[in-house]
Length: 190
Image (cartoon, rainbow, N blue to C red; front, top):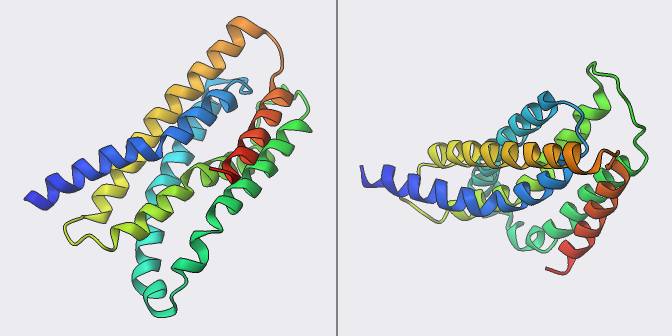
């Protein structure tokens, strides 16, 4: 029973800490959305990634890293991988046309997946770290990560969209793309 409570504490507290980047970037990313459904689908995708990334990290660490010892090799490169993904997302936003089309678009879906992946890489690393803790239920922790990241991402996306709609009345894709690229560059030095 104590493992259950410990997993809840870890899941919520670390989930909040890992969702800060998703929240901050969602404030910017949400300002480019035209419809509320984009915020909801993006939040679901971010929650999905925050559920599966710690599980992936946990099970890879159990099965692969302990045998091949790749953990120390990949640890230094995670910031660079996030940088590349954020730059791709930023450049895609820079060249994005103001499209009023409301139908499903594979490019929009790829953008949302890239965004979700870039803000959930730290969950992958947390999953690796959880292999050292015997009293953690990784499924429960990953579920809590997903709930927390979904909630914070949706809140930030809606705030970003509302702010853009009310205050700016302009297409912010270009500026949001530049800001995401700047944040990607800064993330290399943190």
